[in-house]
Image 1: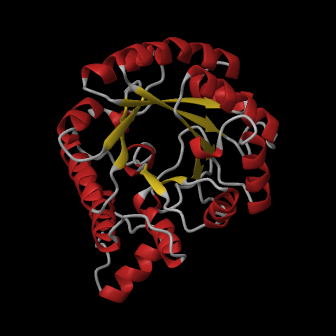
Image 2: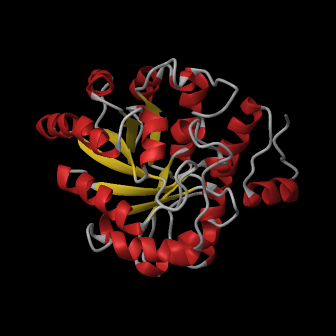
Length: 303
């Protein structure tokens, strides 16, 4: 448990994609700059998706081009070859593809079956290999689906293995609607770990039912050392009714550092980044740690 943990910051993409308030390219760039300054050197900064489907991600090409000079690794989401073309034109070095462990969510999210989604990503991953671009894979609804209900760990393992076999260097397991509990999270990781090395798995847990930190702790005990989180607890999914944000980066950092696990993140700078974006959104962060520190320091984000 004393090994360092790598945090992948999701705020600029997964965090903002479901917000009603559209954040300008300039402000999104400033957000990424603040996160990098806080020590979060791996950030997902945009998505090359239909502007009609996710208008909040318009201008992702400009964001990526502008932050590319910063020290770090910047990921962008691509749904298909068209998105990949746009990402490469903007200078992407790492792209993410996504599949669901449930049929209901796959059809609601990208209008195709799970098997069809994998087929759709095959040419993307093949081209990325040829171009020297890294590919990260997401699996959605790993602990439950808003349409299908319970999702079996074996179904998650099957999709994760397919993405791994295609050539994804890391597979991020997403509790999209935040319904998991520690026992279920542990069983999930043990099952998926038989198909994909634990060293190549990441945990992407939303906090809808307040279980994300407990689930992450269970995953840490199993040996997973990569965590996706979003500053301020930003997030949600347009296709997952009722789901709240990602686990807050501040809460994750506070827990890990309190356990003696190094994160390399400066909490005060992270808090500043969170307050910065919260003011733009017109509401305080949902992070418990950010709320506590703001109250303690008298620096609550003014809305």
